[in-house]
Length: 131
Image (cartoon, rainbow, N blue to C red; front, side, top):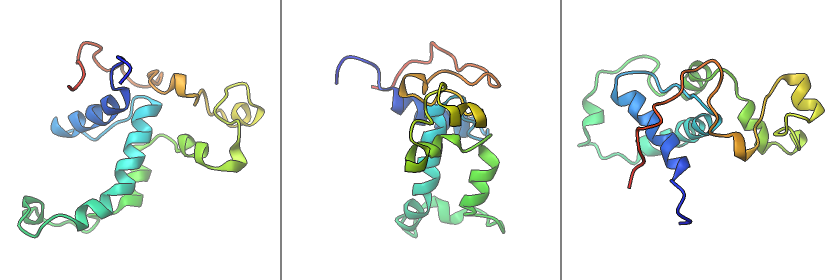
């Protein structure tokens, strides 16, 4: 480690803290959006690996349990960050890119991943980091 705080871990921790407080995980920056996309992508495999004795299996069932596409639709303002993985959108991360400007994507460069979205409140800057 280079002495900098583990920022990606912070994104996952902040979303987990939302859930622990009984709130929907609400991404407040691009890093949190990516963390939530990764969590939703991994969720089906994670559930398959849980033992039958796990407390998860004792929860009441609902008709749309495990609707990962529904989670993806409900929990995000947009899916712009996923364009970073599509070669046809090369350069889209740069706010000066014509495609970025025409779609109103914003700054998806790595240096801006932790800048809060304008429509969300900023997370408490004194919340610390995990060790």
